[in-house]
Length: 174
Image (cartoon, rainbow, N blue to C red; front, side):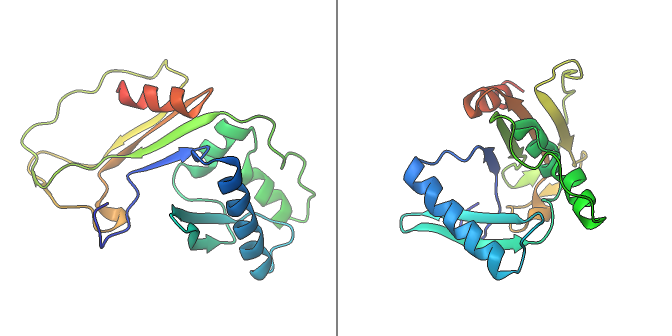
């Protein structure tokens, strides 16, 4: 989102990083996780990649929120929520390592400032296995503001594909 706000409009899996950038991110995440004392568990890490490298801005000893656990399962084959529940219950994780690497787009819906005068019907995508979810949280008459916080986002589109390109193409088709 426009400065000075920090609201994601899209989160992409895998992040479109080069190998050297990915190594820096992995190192940063590993250090941060160990500093929290997490040796066997799940961590949700959010960062931005700047001209000077990755910048950590959120880390939590938890799964990601919203659609993130569903996306993780689609892109890696790992059900992080179930694995974390097992760990919390003293059960050894059995499927914590990724089985594959697919793509996903977690696109948040934002509109320019204005007033909602009309909402068109959305096509039925229930038979499309690459569309995980579509959420729209507005109604006719709502006044739309610039996205200053995550609560200002108006919904989301979650798509998957064999690659990030496939997932983005699917999101663009909606």
